[in-house]
Length: 420
Image (tube, rainbow, N blue to C red; front, side):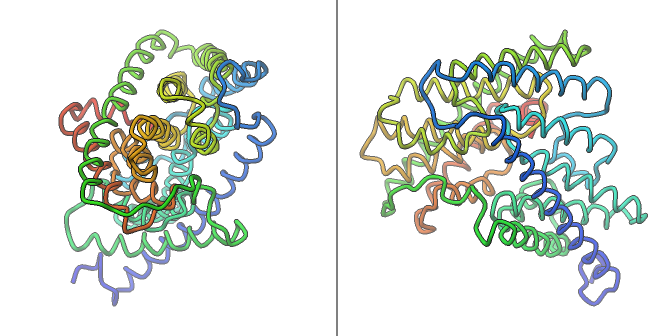
């Protein structure tokens, strides 16, 4: 048996020891980061319960402009940058040097109300910590890779309230198709359990805020629901393509300012602040607004729901291209929920759990290359009965297969999702 997966091998148990310790430390780091983000947002952001257009507070323009100035200064004088967590997982190593400044820029971006999520900073915090410890202890390449993956698993299991999702993310990233990889998965899986347990305990033995954001009516699975889920997966594709178009257009517009990061981010903060005044649902991650929009969907109406979804895509793309650091998953979940609400208004005979559940996961799955893990995260958000989960998984796989198989070349895919 290979020493990479030999439970009688001292080297394997040493690797496991490093992996579990790093999973715990990374979960602690991610928890502290999330706590600081929540504290900052509670002090800075307005209550995110208003969806009415042109009712966002004007002082958000000042807050987001100031945040843009600070992020621009960080970019100008440090090595801060957007870090692709999936690329790090593929390589099994992350240069720790840009991590502290990137974390600071990300924390300011999230507290400042930009349409970004904490999954990217949580991921590269964990990967940077694992890489730094591995370098300090002079660990070999394979052990370093295992510690990095275990670190990310520990952080993500806590963040997403789901240890299984963290393991699925590793299965959906690039890896050798070998039974030996189960040795790494065993360590990373145990690290994920540790990370989940830490968040669970520190949250007062409650799940993270993702659990049950939407309380949707229970429905009985029917065969025709599977056909509907395929259609919903197809409907999610245009949203992904619009996001790609926004990214390309804004990237070209912002390109002349890339050598002037202070001006770039300050201007971006000002413009996105104006957008926040026009449509307050573009402020923040989108998790709080998701519930608000669901309960007020009938009052909002189909057209405005679509407008809100498009505005969130624009806010996300703008934040990423103007130099703010964070992830796209949480805002894309919100976009999917808006489109699901719109579809449910058009076709009220569809169970809300089916329409919203499928769209919530299909929209991010069309962009982010972890469709199965996203489906599992979506189940956590809507609290759907596991028996009714199959359509949600189908819609995620359909959206992923169409965008990544038909519309995106390898380079386009990497470019459009490099912010994840």
